[in-house]
Length: 93
Image 1 (cartoon, rainbow, N blue to C red):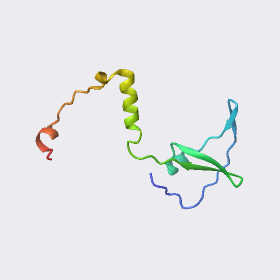
Image 2 (image 1 turned 90 degrees about the vertical axis):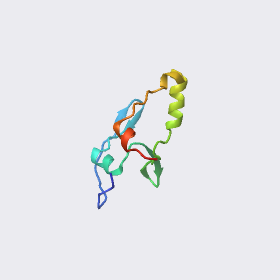
Image 3 (image 1 turned 90 degrees about the horizontal axis):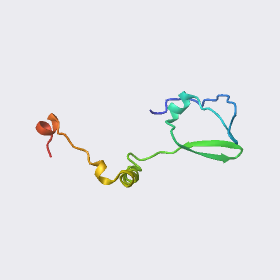
Image 4 (image 1 turned 180 degrees about the vertical axis):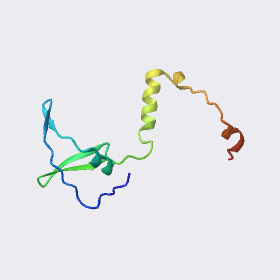
């Protein structure tokens, strides 16, 4: 989702106790506008700065596949491929 906010959004939040730490809730509309799923948190000039971490498509997939192969064994990951009508009639190299 592209950022469609035209001016800065200021919202009041309260810190809540989370174990030995404190945290805060970010309103959903802000998370959606920022496309925020993972971020870095930086303390800079008396402010907390949250910066989204932008990942490349399929980043980390290779490592995850290797992890699963090690856990389950490579034979467990053999997936039978079934051709579709598209594969048989329409796909062209």
